[in-house]
Image 1 (cartoon, rainbow, N blue to C red):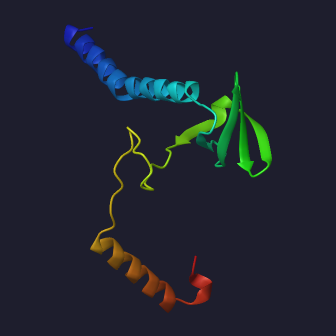
Image 2: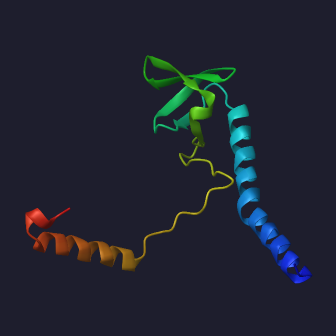
Image 3: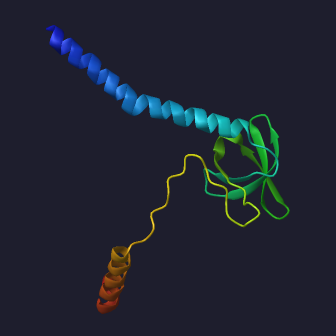
Length: 128
């Protein structure tokens, strides 16, 4: 093998590490920190899509209230996200890693209007 080929292989592994492994490790650390910092009263979203309020944390279990008077036990690893608390002015606190939501443009509104008009013109059996 030529030294140039070995250099290319090493560089390729370096790029793969930067692109795939580092971001995954960062997500794992963030998830672990989130689970370690769960506390009573936190609003959470479970991996199953349920919104709940943490009532107590007991080792690998979390006791959550999913409806008034309905408390269930949940595996800690099933917590997908902690919902930010609302501040006094009624707006939710910003998450550090949230991306800014794109605001709809005039083009989006036009596309939605055209789609609605097209659906209204088509026979009911062709609508999805």
